[in-house]
Structures are given as C-alpha cells and as structure tokens.
Length: 327
Ligand code: IPM
Ligand code: MN
Image (cartoon, rainbow, N blue to C red; front, side):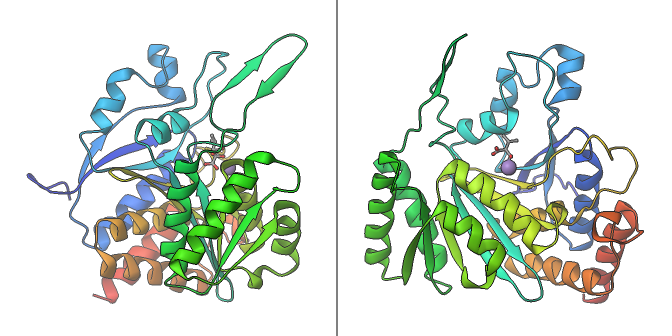
C-alpha cells in the first residue's frame, strides 16, 4: 500500500491499549478500499514513555509535520505528574481548531462541531495547595473560525444549534455573538441552546439536532453523551481539522481493560479512516467504506460492546470483504 512517491503521507500513531488493534483494522479496510497512502509510523504515548521517559519528543512533531495528516489510535496517560497530553500537544502543535464528530445510525444523523484549541483547554492554569484555577479563554478569532467551519457544514445540511452557557459565563457571550453573526452571514437556519438543556435534549429527543457548534469542554462532554445515545463509543469517529493539517481518531480512548484481547470495536477507527480519505478528496472511496460499515452493522457482525461475539479482526474482515464485492 505504501508506494514510493505516494502523494498522501500519513503519520501513523497507533498508540497504546486498543489503539494498535483498531488501527490495524482500519489499515486492512483502507487497503481493501484501494487507498493509495504512504504511512510513516510515529511512536508516541505510554509505550514510548516507558522506553525513553518521554511520551512525545520535540522531533516527533517535526516528523508529523512532514506528513499531510495523522491517523491516530489512542494513548494511555503515563503515571507522570509532568505528563502533557500527546493528543492535546498534537492538536495545538498542528493548530487543529475544529473537531468534527458525526453521529450516525439508521435513524439518527447529527454532527458536533467542537472548538478544539481554546476554552477550558487553553492551558492557562494554576494549581496551588489552597486554590486551583483554569482560565476559560474564548477569543474572537477562535470563535469566528469554528463558527465558519460549522456554518460551512450546516449550509449543506439543515440547521445549526449554537450550544453555550451565556446566562452564566461572560466568555460565552462572545462565543454566542460571533456564532450568531456568522450564521446570519451564511444565511443558515440556526437556534441557540444552553448546554444543560442541550445535554437533556440529546437524550430525550436527539432527532431535533442537526449540526451543533460549541466550545471545547462542552463539545467533549456532549460528544461522549451523543456516543451513548447512538449505541456506543466504539462506533464513533472524529476529524480534527486545521488549515494545513488534520488528525483522524476514534473518539474512544485506549481501553486498557480490554487491550490485547482482540475484541475492541474497530468501527470508530475505520470510520475515522474514511473521514481521512474524504479529506484527501477521495469521496467515492470514503462513501464505499462507510456503506460497508453500515452493511456490516446491519448483518450484526459486531464486537462484544455491541452485543456481538466477533473479534476486532473479524469485523474488519467483514467490512473489507464487503468492499471487495462492491468493486
Ligand atoms: C477526546 C478526549 C481528549 C479530550 C483527552 C484524551 C485529552 O477525551 O478527544 O474527546 O479531552 O479532548
Ligand atoms: Mn472526550
């Protein structure tokens, strides 16, 4: 698959726990889809920390930057008080400001567009004996670019819901204003909703949502909730997008409790790989992968998290075989 001179260079970060297992599943399906990619393995995370004392070195970011994007499995947090999240370092280092999380089943279809670089994750914090603070930084530039991204997506769909807590947080007054102005400019139908109400409505009536745009931590929490609503974290992909680079990852973590048993659900990783192909402009192949996933789910070829008894590899093989038939 990794042909010489391939134009699409992908940094492959399998990571820890179930990361390598689900990424191997995604690689098999990419191959079956006929994707022409060059993979550059980059070892980051807990395993690397154990070997070298560092989960990620300075040069690693430089190596990643020689690639177009990253395909990422999952990373286990090392027991190190000085540990800086590898994923957050990559998001910041590559300026991946938009975290796109689609949630799709037979009867639900909505997207969470999460601001990915600021808000509660700005890193302006202090931890003392008696007091700890985290500054929630919302900027005009940060709000504008995520609002633009969300409107671009919503303009091809039905409507936008701006999720915030502006009745309490001054920072969300700015976020809400910019999102409203941007939605007006794009002429996309929109509403806004307080985050607590959004959390409730997501469970009570998820069908009312189409595209949600929100700040970093709210998006983090609501996307795990949304994953629960559609049937499980194992199904859900994500694309972290910037102007230049992108990173694709399943939204689940490294799940050390089931790592090494070959039963992790590869679908989140496979769908993330499909989002990567779409980003590269290979829309046809991406659709075929997504269709093969849906077909496989409909056949009840599933890992234990979905009530099935298949292994990671069996699910990836079923999807790959379906792709071979639809050629
Ligand atoms: C996610 C994860 C990350 C986040 C962690 C691992 C830093 O929960 O991608 O949703 O909080 O953004
Ligand atoms: Mn999360």
